[in-house]
Amino acid sequence: MTGENCENCRYWSELVVKCQGAGHEIQALCLNQKGPFHARYRDAGQWCHTWADGAFGAVDDPDLPPGAYGEAAVKR
Image 1 (cartoon, rainbow, N blue to C red):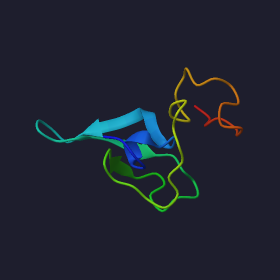
Image 2: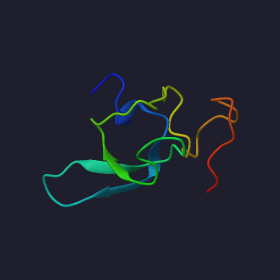
Image 3: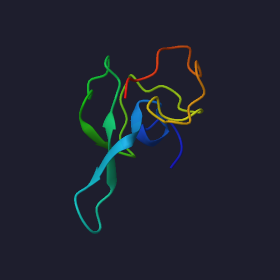
Image 4: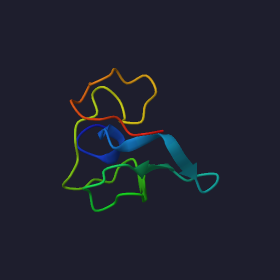
């Protein structure tokens, strides 16, 4: 998938994910505190108006370069 969906959003968690069982999509936690789905699990293909480019990875990615998005990292 490409485009402005959860899978490509910087707030779609890299570390907090779940799957409901065989044949179901993986869901990840939305980390955008200003978004309508904060702290909810979202499918990769979903989207919202607070989408933000995740070119450097998710904000909770342990390998995210410091200051990559010019904001404070999510506290782990």
